[in-house]
Image (cartoon, rainbow, N blue to C red; front, top):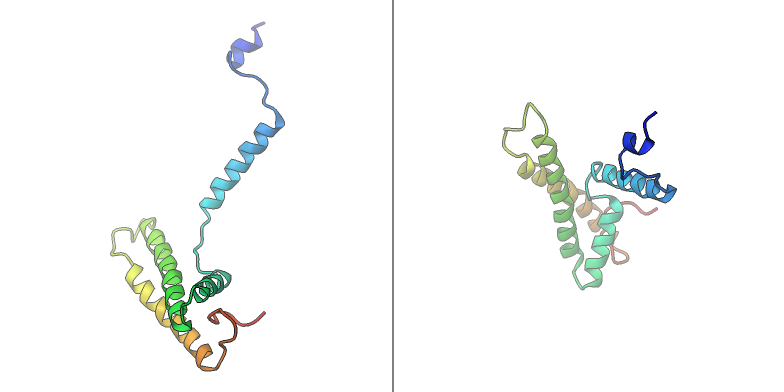
Length: 130
């Protein structure tokens, strides 16, 4: 019968449970990175507009910067999705079109709410009150 060390290798030794917890956490973290869906959640937009208004930006300036940030995220996702599409990866990037559509949609929504007087607090109204 062969020695167990020669079968598994001279450096193989049992790993403590905490090693496997760290390995599992690392695998989970890597899988989460692959699941990035964008950066323009309603909460993120509210936090960003709040931070900008605390810095002294007007509602319009805070809205513009927040909308640019959110639309850049959507454009990045559109570009990434297009680049991994085996049929359309050689086509021009959809980022410019996505940014324009996004800005139009976001400004339409925000403008309506601001003109309706929903300007209380430091945030630009990107979502209805909870």
